[in-house]
Length: 392
Ligand code: PLP
Image (tube, rainbow, N blue to C red; front, side, top):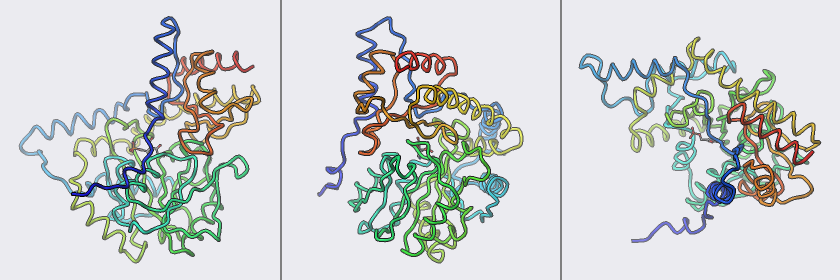
């Protein structure tokens, strides 16, 4: 028996455990301190009533012999794929065939699982800083990783370098952790580059619901030619608070590699996956009803307003940051040249506010800090007041 030695190349995931440990130790040392977390990447608003109602109805169906359902299609029920296709058509002007859409239990699983389709001997371009899953899933398979530097100089939206060879390219827009977003022109350059290199773009659209400016792209398929080179992964987690309910989708167009990738993904999913629960798919479909869209908008607007409040404070303090407009994340430069863990300690010790040190997302994050808008309004306002007092 031989183990997968590539796991030895993974770094321990210290980020969130260290953040939690430091916050806990601080609270133990300061029992009267009221610690506020602006570090969470999880949503806090409850599911919309229309979603809960759909879940209840589906659960009731499962309890009656006439409407009970066993195994469903591995790639998802048509009623949900139709709702998603309709969403793309209305929001992005993108037309998708139902069998190009695959329902998943979330973006994270599919981002890892899709790598089954690609040889280990591929060069992968991954942004730095980044959602750590892209790096770790490729390390597990032993692929060569080339980092794409996201810096203030390139507006945190790095562009292709013709001299760089690539087989797989990860793009996340709006971005976690930076909150930066690509324009149509920039994505067009990536699509053209991928097509020239024969590469596949893995486009993570998990935060597309935060895009407010209709002139900015929410889907890679808004770019001409993208169906020939891009897979898009998306999720109900942030649009509708499904982080605990679990549902997402992946689009693998027929035009990609002459239909080969779609066929391989179907084969992979029907072999290794037995689908998302019927109850959850009914809940997800309710998100895209007229009433559902109205109700989820209230939650998204709530987070947006939190982001605006944090952004306003950072602006008033003269701190450079990106994000917070088309994203729930704000990526701020640590003040006075502080390193990100140093700033983490400073903020915790002096304001009892917790954020996420940029170093945890990659080398380029070592002097940055991520704040999130997913918290409670009053707590966000209180945290912002403390930050203003400390840094003002
Ligand atoms: N992609 C990005 C960029 C994320 O930040 C996250 C979660 O935070 C995910 C994917 C995972 O989404 P899901 O909850 O659908 O697995």
